[in-house]
Length: 344
Ligand SMILES: NC(=O)c1ccc[n+]([C@@H]2O[C@H](COP(=O)([O-])OP(=O)(O)OC[C@H]3O[C@@H](n4cnc5c(N)ncnc54)[C@H](OP(=O)(O)O)[C@@H]3O)[C@@H](O)[C@H]2O)c1
Image (cartoon, protein in one colour):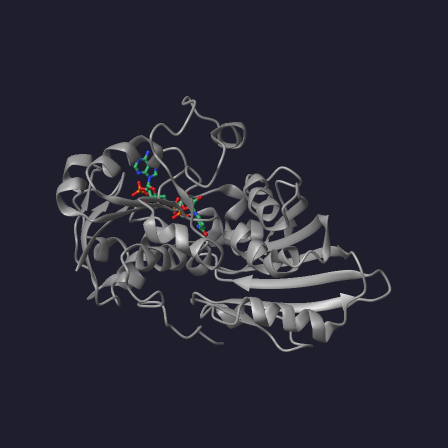
């Protein structure tokens, strides 16, 4: 049995981790932390967990984590996991951080976009936790930087095209996200009356996911790759739909393109390349760890259009984190994650 701790267990990704892990036969939830709900049982904070998890919430104490856990999921705001990573690693406890602390190859990139009073990662070596791209490194990792939700949808959507060298290295990405992407703390712009029946762009050309997307796309492309990224807040609870526009270097048929994508993902349980003419939706992946990818070519402008959908809280966060845990502990990669999307 893998003994698991979840830090930030009362947040949206924390609760989603508990939901998924409650159905995972190889796991025991041993430690839950919260800032504001200490002493309460998680099932009394979130009634959806009644009968599934009656563990108590604790103040984050590193010695208790080390004593009780083999792996820790940090579902905390960015900047916190960094403070505990060295101690966890030296004690043999693995860390999967759902925040941004360990997503970057270059610490300066993290510092520039997120701010930090630190100057480097210290002795902590880390792996970018997108299993479909970095599976072999994840197997050996002590610390995994779980990808952001938008980056997961974008990188999975573009990886086959970039690897095959068919597109230019300037890409336009238009993404839509459900409101749970912003977490459970109340914010004026996320209130029902403010966002229902409305769709609005935010952080245009300066969203924090840009450097992470560019880092991974550049590695796949073997050259510096830039994205123009516009995220939108949409009035739905879960889901991300990303549409990517890429200039094709030469003519390619939709059949040939579809073959390249199908071949690239042929062994991937969680990535489904849709049939030609089919387009993804957030509804079709709701509450699941799947990523659906649709493809189209605009012949008039010689543009490849890739559409990719995920559930931000599952493949975009907690499901992917459990997928990473499975890989790190030599468990079947899809264990605990075979849930059928909820439809309608
Ligand atoms: N939401 C998404 O779709 C999504 C997707 C991918 C990645 N992420 C990332 O995952 C992380 C968690 O996101 P979330 O949406 O679950 O956030 P959230 O709903 O706002 O929850 C944050 C959690 O962290 C705890 N916390 C906050 N400040 C703390 C502090 N100073 N010390 C200890 N605990 C503290 C909160 O505890 P209390 O509320 O109990 O006080 C809560 O349990 C973030 O880094 C986020 O960027 C989120």
